[in-house]
Each structure stands twice: as C-alpha cells, then as structure tokens.
Amino acid sequence: MANIAEGFAQGSDRGFAWYLVIARRSTAEVRSLLILASEQQRIHPDECQSLEAICENISRMLTTLIRYLVRENRTVRH
Image (cartoon, rainbow, N blue to C red; front, side):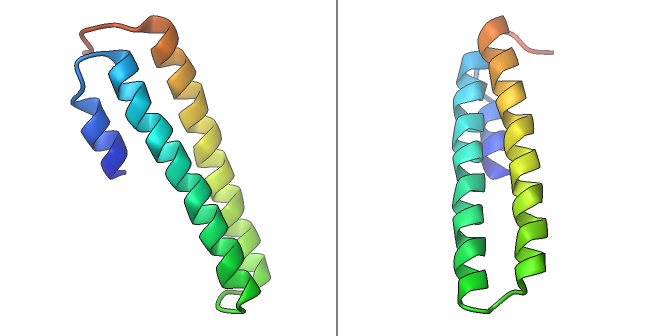
C-alpha cells in the first residue's frame, strides 16, 4: 500500500507504474513468506492457500493497471 501511495505522487503514469511494479514484487515476497510459514506449520495450509490466492488476485490487478499506465503515459493525472 505504501508503494502505491508513494508512486501516486509521481509526475507521470510511467513513474506511478514503476512503484506499482515494486508493489507487485512485494506480493511475491508475501507469497514466499506464506509458503515458509506453512512449511513451518505456523499457519494452516488451507489458510496459506487462501491468502496466496488473494496475493495472486492483487498481483493480476496491479499488472492490469501497470499495462494501462504504461500505454497511456499521461504526464498529468486527474
């Protein structure tokens, strides 16, 4: 969330998109930590799977927004 907020202050869509890429990478990091937690039996495998699905959905949404912003590349956003 912080990456998205910081990126929104960028002066262009492509600048914003770069921060969204970082946010998408963070979802991959969270997924890896979920797997580790599940393997260490700190969370139930079903809970891990559910949370991984949420991360995957967020990652897809970020990808869609990144593609749109790169394509549009407006220098002023409203």
